[in-house]
Length: 375
Image (tube, rainbow, N blue to C red):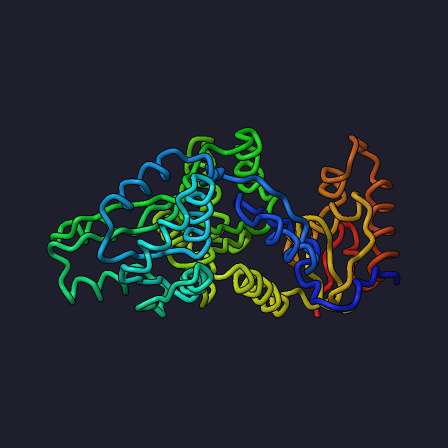
């Protein structure tokens, strides 16, 4: 029996898994991390990001803020604050912006936002360790915000209700959107990705923003395949992962229960997905020749890739789907490439599968057909 060995180093547990990356920002970083663990990565951004340096609305809002300095500035994302300062610098306003920020009370939504504040030469006055806008809202409403001027720097997804709640409590709120979401760069690729996911061409989909999740789900609904996607997740044949609870919310609203890491970081997202597939190994089929897992692009025997031909892969999938029941020669012929009706073609395909995976993997049931041997 011959199997293809995976390279040493990082766990190759994602070998044979087709993972769809829906993100625009930092997609290369995410894709590389998944590929290093064996995944076949497909990329179809659900949205694009409008670059801050070309966003006239942001510059106008910045000038308004400089003219009427805020009492409090809420920084929701590190990349957002950096982008804001960069945009101000391009317009010759960076020094003035930093000076105004230095006189305001700076509230950071998590350590990344605090790091960006420090990188700008400033100091955060308070940090939401939970990395949620809800914690910031609880703090400010508890203290009272009536009559205060509060600037909220947020990303394209909005401020998670901060603006509305603070304004309702009597604050004068100014929102600054540092990058905004635009249409997908390739609408056809987006539509293709939802259809491929619905029919089983994708094993896992990862989301890194709530707007991206909304847009991808909307594309699936428009293509008439959302129900099929939800059914695949419920059946366990499709894994969906979200970088954090905010990103997970639109998926949960549609009945999808995504994997969510404890910390909203890309690295944690990858580790969570890897851990899921490591655990799924325990659900592999126990056969006389080893643990068998069949994925979208390959089959794994004891964690190693089987060098199957398309015919061999088709027959193996048929046997696994039968779950121990007997598969007739006619059924084997139906899944083989071409249109042969010769029973000998089925026998040859099964024989070649045995050569690759081991003779004991497939049992012959006299006058009936074949079945997968189970231990």
